[in-house]
Length: 160
Image 1 (tube, one colour):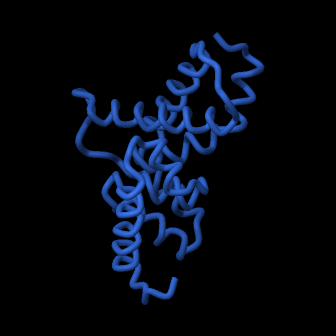
Image 2: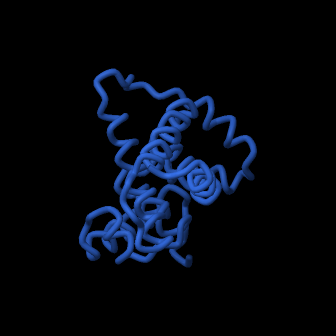
Image 3: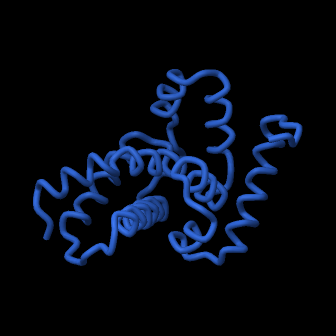
């Protein structure tokens, strides 16, 4: 079991990333808070050692994604998701950022994951493959398809 100081450091280091991943998957602030607590409780209780800070970050991502998927599969989970908290967050964004956020949230889950990890967390395709347990070529394909969908949704001309 980890100490309070080590857990506090992990929350400062990874808390924003965990929240963003949860919001992308769950689109609901209350569910995000629940999963946030679950992830850091698992971290507190985890008895294994991390090889590096990068290994620890990958562990956080994997645990967060699994917890989100578990919640979404839950029998008691409502199939309608209120977006009021996300809408409140979106009001703080510029029009361009809001449009991009809405387009990313409209993508299928497998595309949201790779887009988030690549563009927001800065992972390469091989690293994303290891984190998500997918083949590298599958990650490249998903990134390409996600970009194509985003380009179509956002009316891009293909120049970037």
